[in-house]
Image 1 (cartoon, one colour):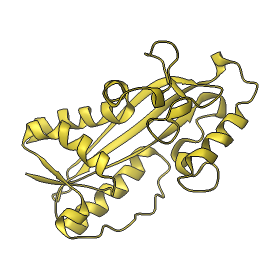
Image 2 (cartoon, rainbow, N blue to C red; image 1 turned 90 degrees about the horizontal axis):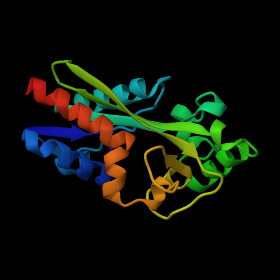
Image 3 (tube, rainbow, N blue to C red; image 1 turned 90 degrees about the vertical axis):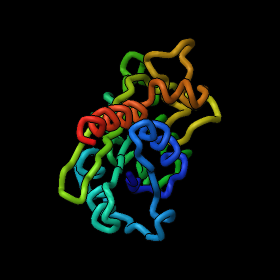
Image 4 (cartoon, rainbow, N blue to C red; image 1 turned 30 degrees about the vertical axis):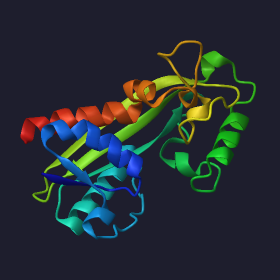
Amino acid sequence: MDFLLATHNINKRNELARILSPLGIRVLIGSEIGIQLTDVEETGVTFEENALLKAESGCKESGLPCIADDSGLCVDYLNGAPGIYSARFSGVHGDDEKNIERLLKELSGVPREKRTARFVCAACCVFPNDKKIVVRGECEGFISESPRGNGGFGYDPVFEPEKTQNGMTIAQMSSDEKDLISHRGKALTLLAQELKKIL
């Protein structure tokens, strides 16, 4: 059975394909079925709403069940910011360095115990018959005082997951280590469990 993933990111596709292949699901992206998906304006006020907007649009344009996700970083000291605005926290969309710079500036002088945060991922699947599945995965941790590590992307160099040794950031972990604890890994695993019930 073919499912569309509403992304241009081949790494996301590969990760989801690994999780869903045991269910007999083949995960495709737009370019593989010859369509250019519309870049949906993320007007939702939650991760779930934005994921749903993208999945609904992809399903409508392709006629296939469509999976989409929306994720970001929520820092307790900043009342949940940057949240759904994580990718454009600095004012420039997708500038990881500037986003981290602003985050560390906002947390300057804040002690470790008050630097708690979580990565959140909402994943959604919309079917042509309007059936919807929405799940959420989270990874709790702390914001470090400076970036460490060259792996990953986004805020990975300043995020220390709770369940790691020696205060490693996600950017210092191997892909396998990250997959075990990541918010996206958890959300996609939950999604697979829900799909298993209905397929």
